[in-house]
Image 1 (cartoon, rainbow, N blue to C red):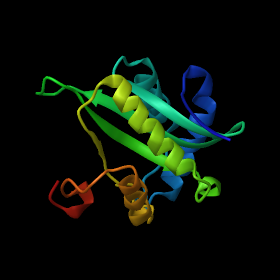
Image 2 (cartoon, helix red, strand yellow):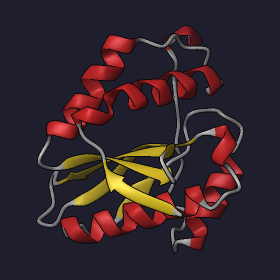
Image 3 (cartoon, one colour):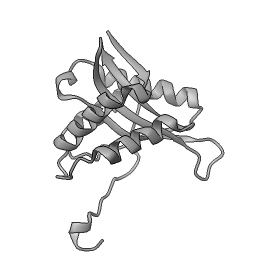
Length: 154
């Protein structure tokens, strides 16, 4: 049974483990930082306009999404999915679909007018992520670009 819930401070240990796995799997070659990860999760947990969603397969945390409702220059907020990660063992188990459903439910509850999500972790599953979100009704909305400081221009 897959369940999506809003996580809180009691889930920090499990969240830090997920963050470490996420960074290790990312294709960027960046180093994991526990203090930065803890601070980031705490900001989302404590925010009135953001949350950390977790998908559980029984008692096991199978994936995490960081979501924020932003009201930059518009009357109605929009949702940004800052992170979306399904642990390797849970891929292909419908955990990703359950988490995507949870994001849409969260967004509706927050009264947002749109949800934006991009695949930027360089894990190699970008097409799978796109296919998953397309099944939820997402459509392409522009390019994601990056300039790393080692590119020599930053």
